Amino acid sequence: MRRRIIPCAGKKEERIRVRRLVVVLLLFTVLGAAQPAGAAPGAVGTVVLIDTVDHRLTVFQEGKVVARYPVAVGKLATNTPVGTWRVQRKAMNWGTGFGTRWIGLNVPWGIYGIHGTNKPWSIGTPASAGCIRMHNEAVEAVYPLVEPGTPVIVTGNPFGYGEFNHRILRNGDVGSDVMQVQRALIIRGLYHGPVHGIFDGETEKAVVSLRRAARLGPDNCVDGEVYNLLGL
Image (cartoon, rainbow, N blue to C red):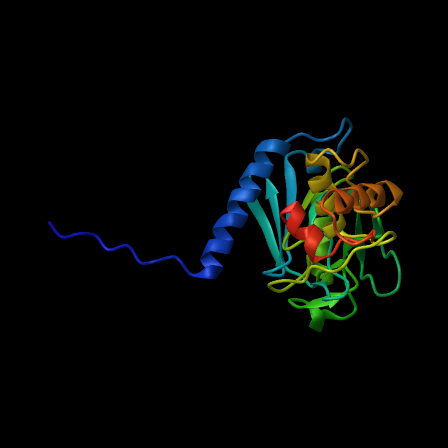
């Protein structure tokens, strides 16, 4: 009997895709088709997935892909926030440079959204200040599929693009990396505030406590040593 040879799928890109799929399936399990009371019929069972690595937006309805489009995401210095958000508001012709449609997200530390663009050549690249850009005709197609409350899952590296881009964090910094630090501090019983991605006074106190316990230098920052202590 001939032994069946299965082609190796161990390439880094394939492993990454499999991990993303597992994450999405888990998120579907957690989120289910739940929507806030009063959500419009078009939003029920709808989830938007944005992949900041592949620069792609996918719309799922009842677990099935109904639309997929290329997008532009944030530049290296202004990453698109990674996390699970919800549509906060919608608007048509929101402002100059935002194309014909605006789908705002409930990111706590700034104004981020999915929108059209007057720079269509930027689609498929890291080019924005953190928002997700689409061709106008594409965002016009997505617009009626979502309503306030629709989950928007943004996948990628919360610490930035590339292999290792952990920045030194201090009071006043914001971002997905701050959220990861806050979660890790909660696990260690040092932080009891919200996971909102804002390095505030409570986060600073927790970091200082961690540094003191580990006998690190007298500072209030999250640096390489703190990241190592937190397993990040």
